[in-house]
Image 1 (tube, helix red, strand yellow):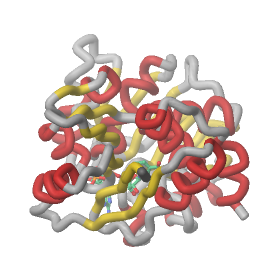
Image 2: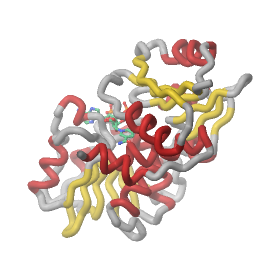
Image 3: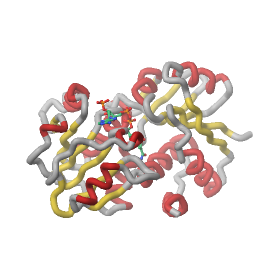
Image 4: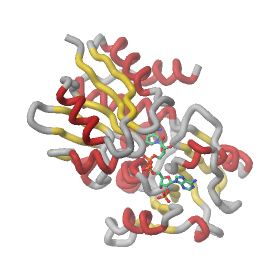
Length: 266
Ligand code: NDP
């Protein structure tokens, strides 16, 4: 019998996850289906309850439900515990298990696919939502110094407060002037509305990488980074790598991400 999976978000029509998981399933011979489901903004828990009742085996969770997913889980894997945000759910008969594959996906894309080593690098993480929370600890553990900047400073401060030795800094956008970074990651959803972030010129060190978690379009952040001399990458590689991690958690089989990423880039 075909095992059913899905990605839940709002909005969700842009998601490439169904295509990616179909390619993984074909490549590995796994009998699964995977669809995109839009949950009402006030209806995430009800949507999960429905999927469980209908026999789904698990799901991915995306904007804006990752914190709510964390609250809903009966058991939390180590990778989601620090983030307090969940992007992968596994449904067992009597409980929901949750973990977070965003951080692993980002690290594999940056270090392996883009060949950019994080150790000793000064990284700026823009945003303090579910995606930023998911990648913060993995970036720190990979040896990068991390500054978080967010439109709502309180949220950045809350993320940084988990680091009691003050090794992660929180800033507002207008406190970034005069600072320079090796790596700037856009983990805001500003690109969804083509909105420009108020970033100062001179943000990028020579050889810097500007990484936008958005994919499928040129965002104002990417254009800004190009104009200021940074190497630019979109989030398609992260999307494929985090999906591969979720697929492995569900199916116990690790797909080869390279042909999938190449096919999507075409
Ligand atoms: P959330 O809704 O949890 O957080 C959104 C964040 O974006 C908040 O920090 C918010 O700031 C900020 N923001 C939104 N609009 C603006 C704006 N106009 N100017 C400045 N800041 C803004 O979303 P997620 O964290 O889950 O996702 C963020 C982005 O990352 C999305 O675009 C998502 O598609 C992408 N993503 C990509 C992945 C991939 O695999 N490539 C994986 C995960 C996410 P404030 O706190 O002030 O509201």
